[in-house]
Image (cartoon, helix red, strand yellow):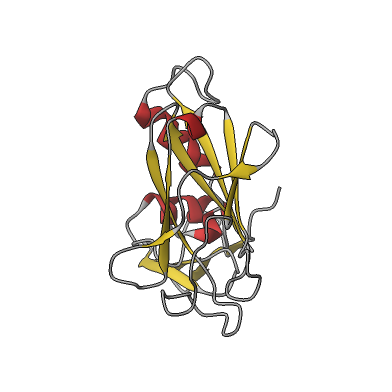
Length: 191
């Protein structure tokens, strides 16, 4: 189970969206696979005791394996809101966890930053291997891959790989300088 992370405005009702996994098939759970109950979503504000959510989980329109939970403003009166989704019946879905970080108020986790700065901060903390497969070739993701992942010169063609070191992300032709010492390869970056 991966924990899903969201950034939401402090003390403002909102909806979070998340996938659920069918316990029997390990596929995305559709409405035919899972019947939400009032005791399936539990919320802890800033590490306090868990309490049932005000609202019940619902399937997102279209029934393609995505679910939603409406959070009240009162449920967002904290820095960090932890939500656990546990099937009260115990048999239909895998457990899921969601963490909501608040912003935009002195009592929020992130108090005075504007929205663009907050989003940039979240993106800068994102592990590149979670987005590299879907990133466009001319994206910031690929530029970061060039800095931290395997790159090599293959007979005048520069190749940049995803973080696994073997999946080719992009390539481009190089113009050689016969007087310079060429770089043959750069290993994947490590911490």
